[in-house]
Image 1 (tube, rainbow, N blue to C red):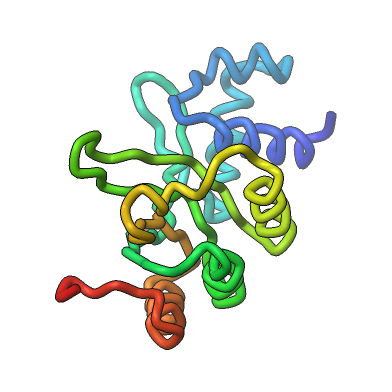
Image 2: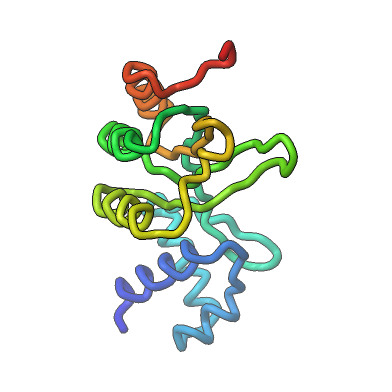
Length: 171
């Protein structure tokens, strides 16, 4: 493996970890000395990667993805319209949850990132033995939406409001 390939692999390894990875561990994984790893980390930093050196190892500083919780309401036959509006405007749907008066917060992961995910989700609702979670709270529910920027989240909020799905604090 040449230096360029090793740098890419080190960056990939550090990027995929939530915990610091020690120089010794990296040197063992890549079959080079710890000093080579120190030089490689320095080169990666010079390339603009925000790698943090800690006493426990190296970790990549990750900028949090902008996200927003939106309260929405609509009928079952409008689920596709809701999800397509979010995706079409640059968002991703992390989850759905409701606040039940007796049981509290009930949440389910959705991970809807594109039109194919929407189609699979709608199909699972058609063929499943359950109804959408929103049905236990008179169609009111929440989604955690992620996007590349706050401006995109604003655009999604406006689009949902324009079609009458967004619930404001007044409602």
